[in-house]
Image (cartoon, rainbow, N blue to C red; front, side, top):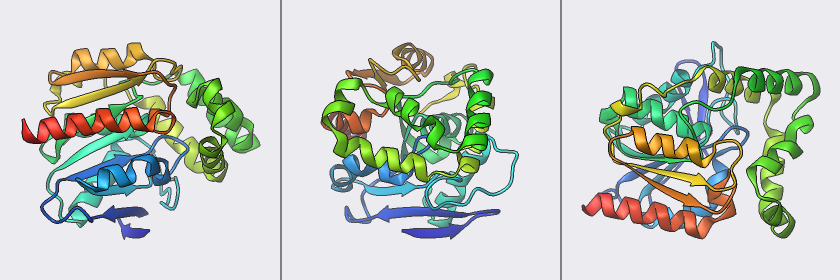
Length: 265
């Protein structure tokens, strides 16, 4: 784990460059309530072809929270600061849920920095202010344990939770280890974010991945993204919200085919 000093925080990241200096860079951006560890099911697969840059979104994992106001733009600027510090002009960018919103912001507002986008289990607007306000109030008053089981029920299908405790338990622990303040700040950033009218400005080739059983960011949300982004394609997997963990083989296949096709197309 490495860290870098940005304007107001220390950001934690890991940069796996085994694929060599000529390999393209792929950035992976985590969901709310997780860390860069959520991408372990993809690490070996993707590191064979890409220099793999994972980071902890501010307020998550080992990254500091810093000062508000907490916005999606702030989190996207963290990414740009990290890329500048590592002297990376252009990257492929894959984000899930909150990370997918960061990817959208970069595609709209920093198009020269992203070559391809992968938007996983995300939406241009997620939830309602009431949902996020209630979530914020609950974690600040009662701690992360008050929401963890409900979150896991949305993140994974019931059959998967019953049969794959070895995959679910690290996610549960990651939620419990996230600070209420860091979680609440990102809830506030998501609450205020709405990219629905800006999606047509994204020029990067884009893959949208949705989960058939995802109640948080539904297939309809994913289809909307794919319809609004000019160079987007849509893939739906038979899973819930954390598609990269519930169906890693299918997720990796979709991601690999997209990156390979776009790289050589």
